[in-house]
Image 1 (cartoon, helix red, strand yellow):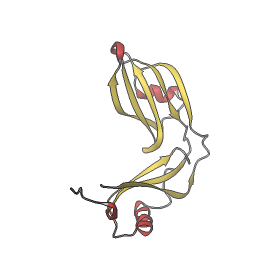
Image 2 (cartoon, rainbow, N blue to C red):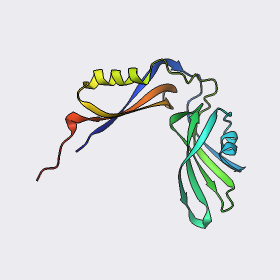
Image 3 (tube, helix red, strand yellow):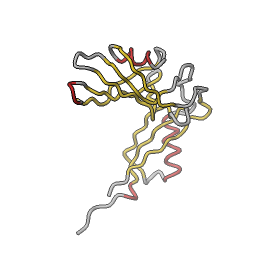
Length: 159
């Protein structure tokens, strides 16, 4: 069985004074994702990206949108909107925080994050490393999401 692990490595001293994430439900009447972001009180540095869309009863569609700030994805926050057959969004709910003023320049590089991972797990034991800079909604700090395969835990099926 392949064991894949993910590790968050915080960027030292990068933080924000934004309030904690809270579930917010809004009855809105807007057109497009920018209108949804504005309805939640988010500034133009925040953006929403459609992630998943599906049809619901009555010809409406629901869309899950991920939140980013200055192009950095926010891990743990999203908005689900519902739109009618004409594309008009009439409701939206989700967990959002306002990250206005947050510095999105990490104090450590992706390479340093990977090196810290290699020290912790052993350089010869990990492979298929993927690194992504994110904002962790729980700590409201910049972090690297590091996904990797622990080759010590790889096994083949046996009969």
